Length: 494
Image (cartoon, rainbow, N blue to C red; front, side):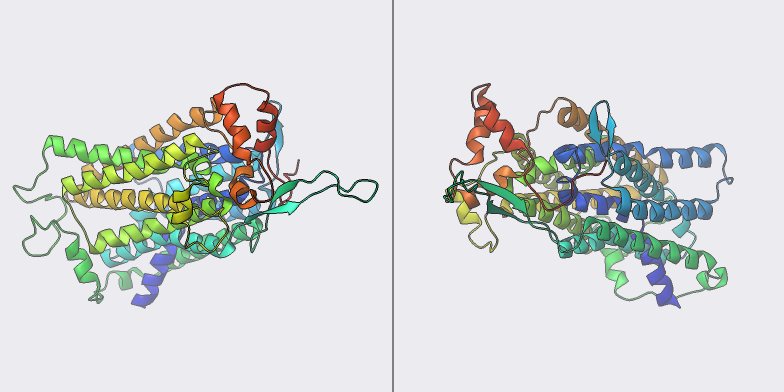
């Protein structure tokens, strides 16, 4: 019975952020089909931030009307909304309408808002419900929460992505001789469609809903009984304690905070909260908004791998933080600076898009010498996104561990700092990407120019580079190079 409750707690945690994580993982395929194109991640970040209306309302209800809000009823409601929204996405994600004279993915945005509302609200409802259970099940819940990024990431890797190839589209003259000889970029289809992926997300939401229903019906007499704790959990718990302040391997009692002499100073607390704001702003707002511009010039495969593996890197980094903790602020500050460096590289590649560094260079060829796929795969960009996500995830976990020992108030301010960082990052990038158009896109045409240069010359980047130098006669060539290539995915339905 104890094992069953652990499995149920893990499955319940799976539904916390699985929907939003799944949307991010499917973006490499959706940007080629939806009219927003490479601006889609920027819209997605803003929609997710707007969905924080849900946790705000729940928090106000707890503050103004304590005891009136029934958490089980709220959880039933949001999980049911998540299941319905995932199913509707499978049918209507490509539906578009005309807004202000332009095609917009209205159905996708509306359903995305409801999915984000589910996941954001889970932060203030799922964990309070788990606090009713013995502490060991709360740990299992966090494992499930980490799997909400890992499981969709594995599915996305299995799904694959339509890699590009050059197809001869020559025209035959009337006398039978070959006329205009041209090449076009074609995306190969994934192993299964986006619709199937959304149905799988709906199944995972159903699993979480079923697990919650079972947990809510468990007899409280069993949950309050003494249960055996696996021995493997002991070193994890003791490993989270501060090595410089630990005396007996036990966590500080709630409300007691740090032992005397271990209290962080005001400047240290300010630095800790700054790391929270910056890490959240970078990982939830600044970089996700330009991931398409950063990765797509290297190929759709590189974008797909960076999105999928970055999602897998987060729970892995959290696991590393559990077994190999380091509370040193100097170390965490250095790690934040290192992660910022990787993020800066990704931002620079986005700014240089659609002709970033290492595209066709000797250094780039040496780095990808072990890659068995066509040169549309550029591991440097994938690796930089993995390291950026992993380092920032480790910092966020360790900062949370430090603030946990300072009591409930510190964690409340940690959550406020996290939301503020995410909001600032999203609001900063949205106008730069979607209004002022400071980032350029190629529609995938440059992703394979190196692969095709032995067949066709000049490469698309020459025309696109001319556009950066100012208006010229080559502007028409630049525009045509930025048009989306012929693809096997269907066009958006009106």
